[in-house]
Image 1: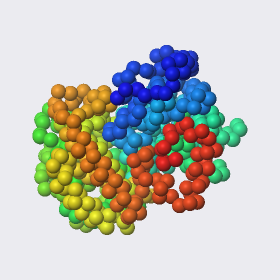
Image 2 (image 1 turned 60 degrees about the vertical axis):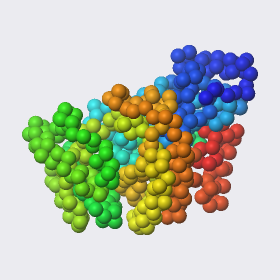
Image 3 (image 1 turned 180 degrees about the horizontal axis):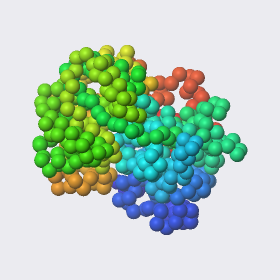
Length: 528
């Protein structure tokens, strides 16, 4: 794709000179391959921006916003780039992208007041490494992609995983945002928006923090986030079950996330588990067991865990239709035992299996994730969020939808698998993931982990498969809407404004107009 711009060379040169003056020469990227990479995600490719700028402080972001405001240039913000919902892709021929890799410091850790303030470009893994020194962690402490995903990006998108079984979604743990809006103003959304007051209280008057959470960056540019922190758990273990019935599985989920007994709750269909486990590999399995053993905390526990997993092996994968996995934490051994017994007590039809998955999840919480299937096929995850009462009917109709697409999917080699996650206070996240053979773009080439290099196949261009995937996604989104479901990571992929009532829709448009009167901040996100 060639860069597009109606601006003449002198205008581009002037813009670039001013960006360099604000950010520094090494923090402004104009190489075409760089522009391609920054404007792509797992699936979508945007128009090429004039440049990608990496500001190092809030003042630089303010200066860029004012510059783009005067020049009528749109701004698109990219966090770790692990999105898949067309959330940050540039639109049109006059835009600048912001990369936050230079705005990634932990500004303050207040153990006494129970919060941490971190800049938007900090990864969840880096934040957790900073907090472990204080024996603390964020109350929601990141998605599984936290080795790359940034705090600011996650808070704009909305995400779940670590802590979601007790805390819920990512925004529940936020106390305040620092946001630069389209006028160049800086807004502190918590109690720090008041003179001489810190960010310790989100609920000082109307909840302004909630307005900017999950906004896909449409309402402003997050430059820092203040999160609630808590002591790290004294004891952690895991439980796993195999189910042959979807309704029985989700009933167990519902009992747990309503009681907040498990910090993480994940599940997958049996085909996914078997496919992703791959063939037995003694060396890799030994490495995995060693990581699990180290996470046990003492040598005797480590040996016990490793023996149990070795004896269990991969036998649980052979027949299960669904495998369900719970990470359980306790403040002491008695608390841990109480939670384990309660989780087992709520189960009525599942078979308990070896707890490899939850132990692996905690032994290596932020792995370097592939952005393709391990064999090199392209992938696209999508999802819907449902209350427990809607799950059974949705699942039945989803199975019918998949059957209607089956023949066409077979023709172009598209497969789909399902993952699930429990979210306290909300319900169940239902996540189909598509795989298909196709060419890779600059994003995939740069993001492919070293451990997959040399083992992935190369595939020819497969536009028919991509077209079919989009058709399935559109049908899926409509089905989610019919069953009263919602989404995180809305971006431009999921319907939002078209399904809002006149009251909330008008309020959001008014907010956008007040905060970003010229619509230069991520235009099109949320449907605004």
